[in-house]
Length: 91
Image 1 (cartoon, rainbow, N blue to C red):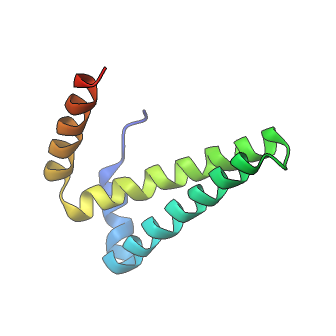
Image 2 (tube, helix red, strand yellow; image 1 turned 180 degrees about the vertical axis):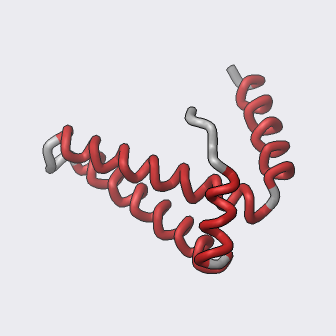
């Protein structure tokens, strides 16, 4: 995965404000959820849905990286490591 420009993301958070960026996390996650729901229904062309899902995944990753900075990079990274290790133990 591409490395995150934390300096840029911090400037986005500072410019738009923490509450607004938390709202963006909710909004982008919802948009991804809706795109995935369209895929499940299967009534639209796969390539169109796939392009939409890819765009929404990118948006979610951007705002999730902002959330990581807002809520504590170290703490989030520790929980990621814990959860990855837990997942590995299930394989």
